Length: 263
Image 1 (cartoon, one colour):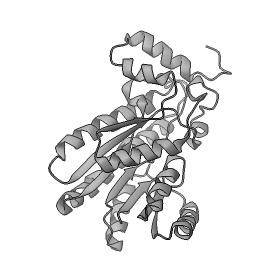
Image 2 (cartoon, rainbow, N blue to C red; image 1 turned 90 degrees about the vertical axis):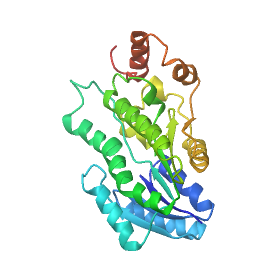
Image 3 (cartoon, rainbow, N blue to C red; image 1 turned 180 degrees about the vertical axis):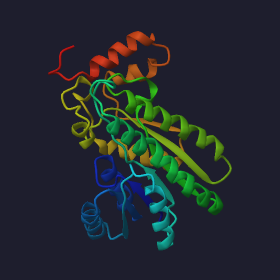
């Protein structure tokens, strides 16, 4: 059975990916910041699903983390069949007046730099082998600018554009890159990003179905997998390319203002 490497394995969507792959009898490489949480997840997964789980503790905001993950896999003689770039985070606030330099640059490192470095290292080996399936977790946020989450939306635009370009570049190699674009999900991402009290996440969906659709889309080598949209997001995402820009910016802004904040 296939070996899957999953970053951000013990939180939200990552946990669902782990369950799905393990339930199919697949072994895992679990990647996250906390060794204690990784050890707990490893023990649970191995006991419940009778698979083998390896752990690599790494802070993806650190420049050297991608090389460390790659080197650890090499030491273990492991080359993933499936690679799920799931780790990422957001954060609400006015770019110039509320968000700190550290917060936004760390977000860029985790959401953009880390997956880019990881695939720069792992893709050549997959191409040489002639097989591999990659799933990069983006967001429907990639389809529009996001006032009050300016940097987050921009990082996801990068992930989607980059993933789509790789999908074409890899044709004929046996390796595919798919992009998962979820809507608003009920995960730890919401609380961590300070988004609990916003219209955007008022009807957030469970991540299990999103993970299932993303995983299946990855297996099929699909270009983009859009999943988990709440009612208002469906027309918004489809209309984003043609909607008047200023009206769209006002709408997105109002969806992300905290209910307790003054407009």
